[in-house]
Image (cartoon, rainbow, N blue to C red; front, side, top):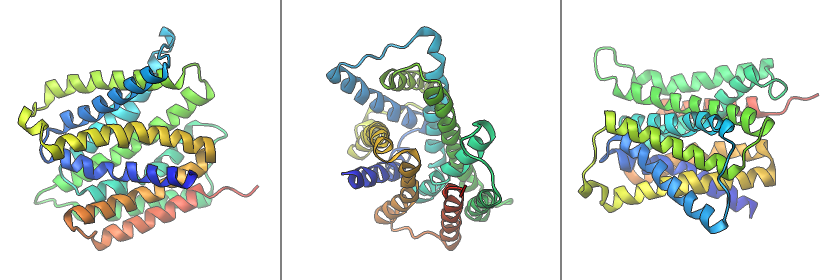
Length: 295
């Protein structure tokens, strides 16, 4: 059963990029990000009502889920949806695979006793950055269209935001936890829904009812909100309970592969040589960073 949870989580996360691509081809990216939060929140409301879970948290602690929601939901979702207007879903999945690289750098810098730099790990970070540049630099066209490069830059920002959120979660919700999981989840989603609704109204273009009711668009919105967000989070919690955080994080290796396979199945796109080489360097980087230090 553990292997099933592992593969299911890899598929839920890896397929998010194809579903997002289906949405942003028809819907404004801000409203697309809002739809992901809306359906995720709706799922958790129903789940908590059925399970009769309390979502109350102390008023003095309300800032914690607000901070985490900004780093784990609002900002990365906006960057993901905006960036995928300009780049293929498979490439977006590759950048998602760099989250552990940025998380290690931030953890080593801000969380004492969790991670530490060694020559091997520092080399791993540099190799990972090299892999990212292999993918991004060929998209730089100083005398032409730069949208692909900006899309890649947005997805790198998404990965950095996720990493910062993971580090903040470790500090706020693990080392100094005073809030229930249910309360944390609910208030993160509510805060993100409010923020994204305001941003969508101010800067986005409201999609028509005809667009929102297209089966492909609506199905992708429900899928990415319920499966790629809410159910994926529950799968992650179960894997951490069964395997521990370090072993559960190995799912990161499969997410780009799932995204690339689904991109090929949907569009027939084969990654360019620089993208294959970039993925290879990123995988080497993850191995060098995540390998335990011998004591």
